[in-house]
Image 1 (cartoon, rainbow over the protein chains, first blue to last red):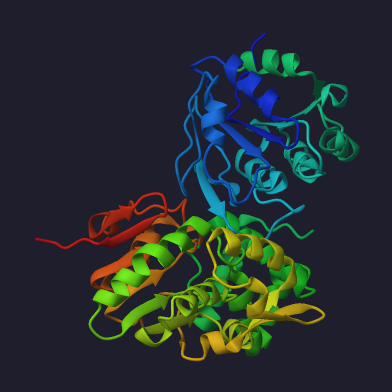
Image 2 (cartoon, rainbow over the protein chains, first blue to last red):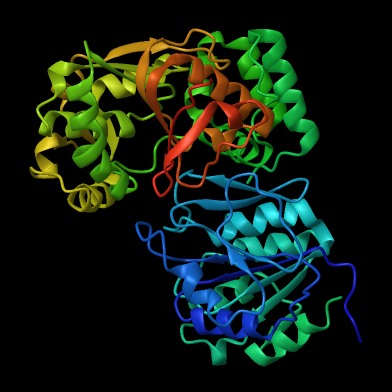
Length: 189
Length: 276
């Protein structure tokens, strides 16, 4: 079975998500057909090092986009330190320095909400391990817009708060282990 | 939560254009939508229609609208490495070389975070009397808040950490007093700042400026407007002037791309390109 007609994947994570994201990125085909947005909580004042660390094993190139950059298939875009990452219409990134949401900038909720508005039912939203409830509201928005929602199996998460909060607010389409998430994404074409 | 659709946003833009002749059509859509939704909640309104009614019925509210639609700076000494570079590199040497006052312009102040940060650095460098500072805002409300020194208590902790990372030479707490709801920054720091109100097309800009601090403002406009604003800023700069924008902002516009060259890539510092 192949999964068609999706335009973007967006992954939100916090504490305990780094290894999971690394594993996902190392398992995607080099010609992954859509852009992957990564909204991961990180230190506000540390600007460099994160992309480099994620890139070590990734099969697709990762960058921290500049404002209004065009999103391209087969590339991953990491929310830069101390900016919110929005998806603007016409497949562009928009960055913002608006107030923190759930103590976070980047906020996973804001990335998911704006991506859901831009891609509607053609978005796949994924919530991974994390220590606060950021992302729960955004995942509901993805669901309400008709997109696919995936939550990492809380039993597998290093920190469960983020995934259980998401599951309390939305009945996710899939509750998957890391390996199942990877197999799902590999079927997108 | 009030969610605005594209049609609502267009209606709001059209109403403001017709009542106040301000054009928000060049604002980046996603952040403008977030700001409008937040503004509707903060002012106990329910939807686009009620916002338009208030704008129509209460002319004084438009200034508050201009303040709240603008995004304040995140915290003081954001990007400590930039402030370190300004403190240890650019400011002392550029001011020493400058004949006459070294003019610095902050074109869009909302909360005064960047302004007070700059003034602390200049004060610690003992260079306050060699500079002229111009601070602009699109709203009287913003200017009032800045003049009072009012500052969000929640931002004090991160600002203090940033100040230390930026090699501040005093104690950050010496620069503000605590109140129940706000911190108030020392007004002596901005005593000699020249404030003025700017309209959103930036057409009354000061000239012969040596340094423009315009960080994380371009992100709130669409690429065409970014380009136009950058041309205005370019005209404001003296031949040896510098422009500093946000770390994740870039100058790529059709005209502005040719008008600036980068001098410090890590900190997004540009200088005016001398043609010829």
